[in-house]
Structures are given as structure tokens and as C-alpha cells.
Length: 123
Image (tube, rainbow, N blue to C red):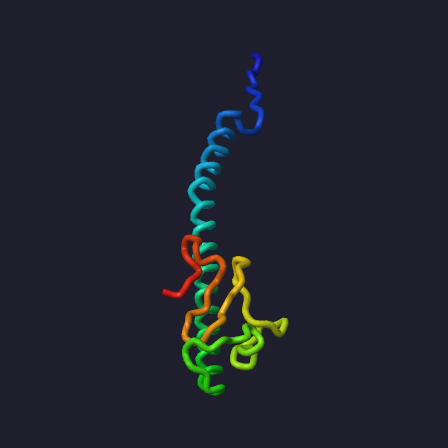
């Protein structure tokens, strides 16, 4: 009697691999926009926090220097003593790469990226 032996090659078929790749692609298509949105939201929140710190420094500067609403500020040199500096010894920077401006007492500091969504602006 002859024995019949079945030879089975170990591995995955092309269809199985294509299904796995399709599932990974679907998950990536769902996840990547959420990661981008979370990143932009956290950058905006960091920027808004920096704007609040600049406004607080502006208020302290105006109070100590007897400035009134509408007086000019030499930004950033006037506010440097009143705000916590970052590790490089400079004022905080916008996490998304914008720049801050605070030129007069009584007005909110602004970021050049205030038109983005979500906006980098104090409400």
C-alpha cells in the first residue's frame, strides 16, 4: 500500500494578505485625521495659554509702570521681567510657529495664526 502524503506549504494566501492590508488602510484612514485634529487643537490650546501669560505680564507691567489704557508697549522687552521665560531665555513661542504681538496697554495679545481653525486667539 502506498501512503498518500499531502504537502502543504506554510504561509498566507494573497487574498489573506490583501484583507489584512485593507483593514490596516481603513484603520489608518480613520486614525490619521483624528491625530491631525488633536495636534492642531493642542497647539491652539498652548498658544492661548501663552497669550494669557502675555496678557497677565502686560497687566503687571502697566500697573508697576503707571501706564494707562492705550499707552504703547515695547514688546517683548518691556514684558520680559514679568513673564516666565522658556528654556532658551526667551518669551514663550507659538507651538504652531506663529508670532505674538502686544503693542498697547489694554488690548489682548494676538497671534499671527488667529485665523486658523481652531483659532489661536483669546475669546
